[in-house]
Amino acid sequence: MKRLIENKLLIWKNQNSRKPLLLNGIRQVGKTWSVRDFGEKYFDNFVYVNFDIESNYSDVFIKSKDPKKILFELSILLEKKIDPSNTLIFFDEIQECNEALNSLKYFNEDSEDYFIIGAGSYLGIALSKGDSFPVGNVELIELKPMIFKEYLMALDQNMLVDYIESISSIEAIPESILNKLSSYLLEYFVVGGMPEVVKTWLEFKDVEKISSIQNNIINAYFRDFSKYPPAIMVPKIIGIWNSIVSQLSRENRKFKYSDVKKSARSREYENALQWLICGNYLIKTTMVNKYKIPLKSYEVENRFKIYMPDIGLLRKMADYPASSLMNLTQNENIPFKGAMTENFVLQELTATYPENIYYWANDNYEIDFTTQFDDIVLPIEVKAGQNVRSKSMTKVLDKLDMGIRFSMKNLAYDGKILNIPLALISEFPRLFKYMVLAQKTE
Image (cartoon, rainbow, N blue to C red; front, side, top):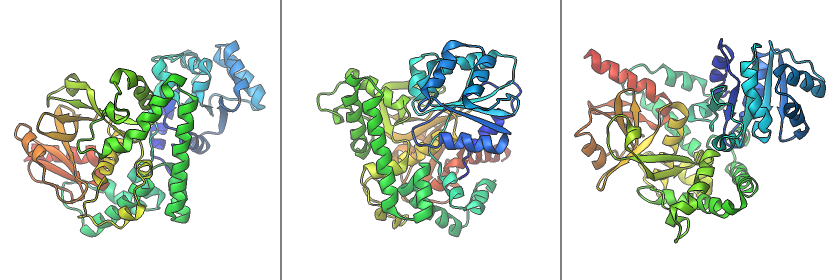
C-alpha cells in the first residue's frame, strides 16, 4: 500500500543540508513498514536497528558519541558493512535508548552526509519530557493513520485519486463520481485508516475480521496504558480513554472532566490527558473566543474537545454497527454520525493541513472548527449529510468575508461559503486557493 509520507521522505533524502529525521506516530500506524519500503526503493543498502528487541545495541551508543565509531561497531554486530553514502540507517523504537536519541546531534554535526531515520510509538512522550532530545539537530515528521485518499489508493482506485487531484476550479463535479466517492467514504467510516485493518478489508471484505483487528489494537493501547506511564497515572488515563465516546456524544463535544469521574478536577487529570495527547492516542482542539489574527492569542486553554486519531477505532469503541453506516443514504441523520463526521474532518485536516485547528464558541453560538489560511481567519462548519443550515455560521459570516463547509453536498461557492464534499477534504488548501484567486480576478 502506497503511503503519501513517501513524498516527504523523498524531499528529506534530496535535501543538501539534511538532518537526521525522527518519525513520530501512534502504535501500529505503519512507521516501520513505511521506512522499510522507502529504504528498499531508494537506497542500495538498508540497516535496521530495533532498540526494543535488541537492547544490547544500546551499549554502542553509551560508550561513544563519535558517529564513525558507532557505525563501525554496529557494522560488527550486524555483520554488515555500513557505507553512509548509500545506506539508509533506521533506528526503530529509538525512544527506548536515550543515548541513541542524543547521538543524532552528533550525526548531524559530523562532516559525513548521513541518511538516518529514527522512529518510535512513544517518541512523542519521550520528546515531551525533553530527555536527550537533540534540539535543532533533527527534522520531525508525524505519521498518521491513512487518510481517505490513501484508502482509495489501497483500493486501486487510482483513476479516482487522479480525478480528485485534477480538480482545478470551483464547480460541481459529476453526481455519479460524487456518489461513488461518498460510497467509499461511508466504507472508510467503518474501516478507518489503520494499515492492518485496511489490508484485511482488502483481502476479505469482512466486517467481523476488521472489527476483531480494531479491537486488538484498542486492547494493545490498554496494555500500553498499564506499562509505560507512572503507575499513579494509569487509572486516570484509562478513565479518560473510556469516556471518549460519551464526550463526543454530547452535542457540543466539549470535554468535561466530570464525564471521567463525577468529582474529577482538571488539576488531577490534566497530566494523564497530556500523556495521551503526546502519545498520539488522542487529538486535542482548543477553543478560541475571537475571530482575529493570530488565533493562537485568543486560545482558551481550559476549553477544548478531544477526538480519536482514527475514525475506524472510534466506530469500534462506540460499538456502532457497520451496517448502519455502509447502508446509509446521504440524507439520513442517525445518532453519533455527527460526532464521527467531525472526527473524520479533524483527522483529515491534521494530516493534510499544516496550521493549527481550533474551534470557536460564545454563549449562544459555536463553529465546529476554525483555522488561519495565511492572513484569513476561516470558520469551518461540518455537516454529516445534505442539510446544511447553520445559525452559527450565518451569525459569524455577518462579520467575516467567507467560510468553509464540509458536507455531502457538491463542490460549490455561493459568494460566502465554499462547500467542499467530505471526500475532498485532503484537497482543501488547494481548492481554497482557487477560490481566493478567482475572487481576486473578478
